Image 1 (cartoon, rainbow, N blue to C red):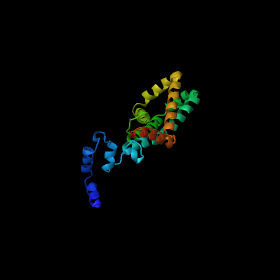
Image 2: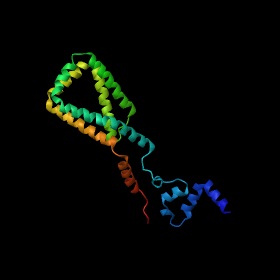
Image 3: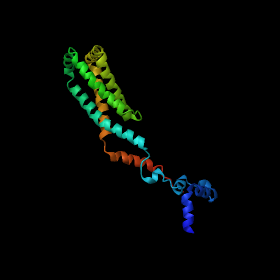
Image 4: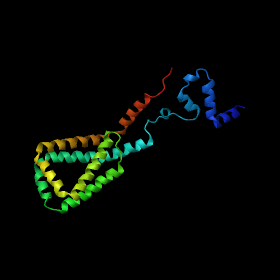
Length: 207
């Protein structure tokens, strides 16, 4: 007899949940977490996982992957440019006369930016927005070097002459690079601990 009752409950869980919540004493206070358990739906907090869905986890993983590459690259590039700031006018003057260098450089820079744009179409959160913005800026730089190299190099020459603005840009790029480096290479346990702390706040409290 008991096996037949259990079989009927397993076959029609929703019906029995409605009966319990309708006729049980204090049914108006019936916990939604208990409804999930009776109907066979395990709440996310009971599974031990965080509240992040699979698409969001994929976005975060992609952002971390690009941050691991772009972060150190931007930081090292900016620090080297700061150290060798006095040599920048010479480097630019040697780059401008040769028409092949802007074409070759623009082609590689453009494809690099397009790869970032194609593989990271995310703007949710500060790290994701920075990675996507860097991809678009790199792609635009490559397009300018291919289409209007003279205008782009003239603007770069004017920026080199404005030493104060150039130093400020390098410092900002270095800061962004260090931030992305932290985002990409920070130990995962810090993020999982923060996520578990946030999810523990959603646990039901005993009456």
